[in-house]
Image 1 (cartoon, rainbow, N blue to C red):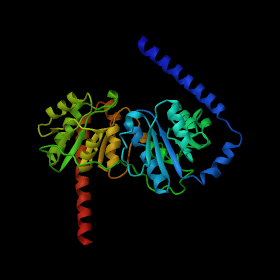
Image 2 (cartoon, one colour):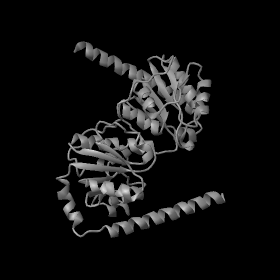
Image 3 (cartoon, one colour):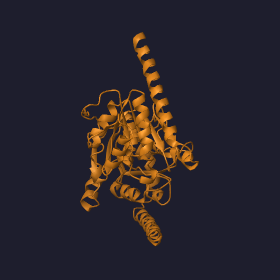
Image 4 (tube, rainbow, N blue to C red):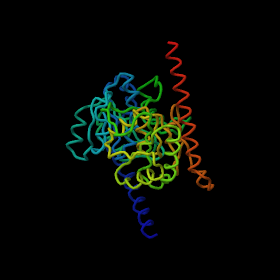
Length: 364
């Protein structure tokens, strides 16, 4: 108990210090008339740097709707990301260049020398990333800086952007950050670079990627639920391919033990996992980085949410389905049975959609 209290106190102190630093940087970078000139300068912008420097794969993937909107409007798009995450969007055809943020003066000088027309802090309004806002301001220099209109991060932006009032969805809100640059935004699109084909011996189509893991254990649903899901897939004639990340081998083994027809995938890189998802009939997972990856590569995705806000983090648009199981867990209901029913219905829906598409092709 004492340890958790001490941790909360330290986190609070860290938060206060970051906010104080943001205010000091905002005051130090203040230039009279900069905000009044910013909108005019945006009309001439062509080269844009997106800033998201934390270390989560899902956060990098959530910048891709921003990339898509800017590229579609004719901008040259650059990304500044955590050094460990340059690999995530390496080779993306709509990203001119990725930069690794190294917290050095050399990195700062190199980015300022690029003289980007605009720099976008790809943070959010609910849980502000003060670090991202400070980095965007410092690397931007004379560039026009855009970011969420929230204190203190909003003080660092030349064009603070108010959130969309109609939604809390994170992907939609991130894409909205560039609304001062893109007048007609178009549809929301996630994306991922092309990948080389990758297959698992003994697994032929149709198969489904079943990913039971996740970075945060309190948001994972239990292995027996995914074993039930795997059995439902097998009963529907779809081979369950159980994928796993570092430290999740035992979890994958439990799922496979509960479904004899499931196949345990070998260790995979992010690109190999993406390739498996691209070729899969569907992907079933928790709310995790792999969920964002599955949506980005176009795999029909059935994601189960637990202890996290579905409205904010889901991709609730066809062909995907997002299900919040938190209320059922709290009510003591059989969530494994509900998950299996969701899988069965999802597979039937995909089959019906495929049949309709086939009939359209025949008529064409």
